[in-house]
Image (cartoon, rainbow, N blue to C red; front, side, top):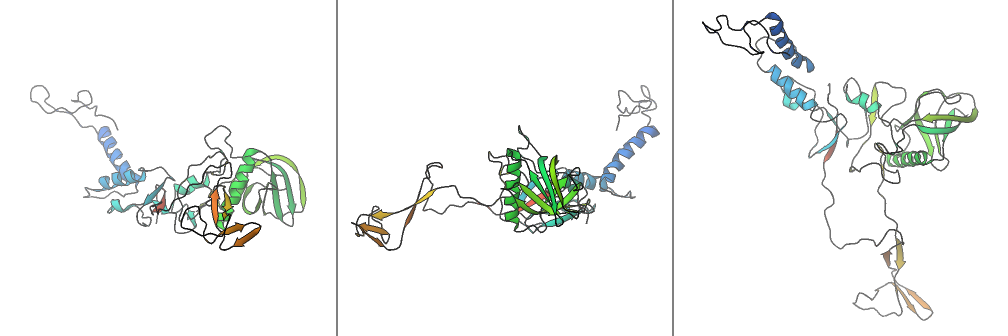
Length: 347
């Protein structure tokens, strides 16, 4: 938009009619009025609101809709206290607009027809080691390839980034429970006899540094100097869909830990910090009420060992420090539904 510049205007401002100093007032020229009209209609067009006579709320509805769309970044994760289904924009009920997908209702394959902004965003995301840091890597080195019985297997380099991504993917697969409906591997160019493309992963061996997937071709193998990537939301054979995975009972953890285990977009199981467990024993069979007595545990008297109900105590393994214990019950979480912002949703 631009300020008015017609006759009678001063520095882009309107001036009132004055019989002496401004007898014509400020002229409203067609080109300026059309600019204003196009700006206003453009607000409606952003939300596909058709022109209508007699309306005095569609510009406001469109402004509300655009404000909701851009209140978060595409793909941003957030929580709500109760479940809410996605809702398309309605010019008559703009406050109901909710272009977000719930992540704790199961795995979902999203179509670009319903999620025109989110699906392309998701399809472009690659799993990346040390994302945003020195040594970041999302194209992982492949050293060998093989095809046997219509199964292709790639061997990755024995280097830090490659070891980390394979370990993280193997962990994510354990969380998923199977290779069905899981992640894909992407070859930007052909590797040996294996064509470029997205392939559903059917096996990972992090010790052998291999990833396998179905590929129909004659048996063959060879060494190669190439790369492969892992687009975390792609579905093999599709260019218009993206897969998101269930996030029930999960919390957010910042990526890029020192071991490369937490890679953005991949999941991990809970782990227990390493400690030793020590058998507790006394030098006799005496049972008493004090902290130094070990009731019904392993008792030693001379060369005789009397085993009741063995007891274990947690001790340091010499690496991870003294384990923390407590006899109190403390709250550790607040339940909520996790969502991903899609910016736009079409029912």
